Length: 353
Image 1 (tube, one colour):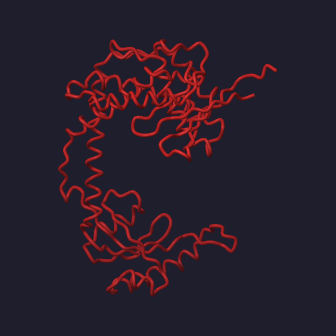
Image 2: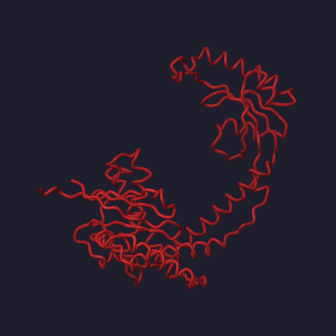
């Protein structure tokens, strides 16, 4: 049968929770060493099981009860892939802590107090048996929250060094209005049906007639409506991947106010009009995306450099004792209190009765 335990999980930026149900695993066991610093099993368990809870809460519904046993890539289960990511994140947290002085980073008294208060709340809202099961002693909770806080502060400091200047030319986004003449239709039962070659020829003639009229229309969208078609708005640049490649190439070659002829794509014919060569809102959004990409690249490069110079050793026998297939973990939002989440676990044990 299943033995059920309920744990209250603190919510908010500094929240973390964990469950451990692995026989023979001691909190003081060493999962990995990063240079001269040990990553102990209690810290690894706490973060691993919290991550597991998030996955099982939000993905198990459509991935199934055996989600962890499924293959995510050749030779690796989904459990293997997620655990690899968790361990790498932990190693990176310890490297960030090691390099935090380089960015004049320290924990403020307010942050330290917040961490202690969060750990104290976790301690008071969970029973002794549950806390033992999750390695949820106060010191461990405080340590995980400390690492997460340092991680965020170091990341912010590193990313602050990225270039935030992006010109309109570099980020320029154009806008268009376009009509689609689809190669599929819907039958009486609501099923999608592909057009025959003959039907496609008829559709092309319709699209060509529309294109000829649209070229001289003052208002593309209004003309589309008059012709019983639906005009859609889109922003784009030469590298846009959300629109058909053929449509993007045709529109990108036009000036403002110009209209394409019939453009054949993989799924239909298209006719479009370029409405702006510099859509202000879309361009500003693209600038933010470019800055975010630069920041992420700088963070990745920085971490990669630290990892290359570091001496990292993983104790596989210890890490392997944390298994997601022997314990299920879920999170539920507490309706009565919006500031707490409920973590529910199902520990698989044999019925000895």
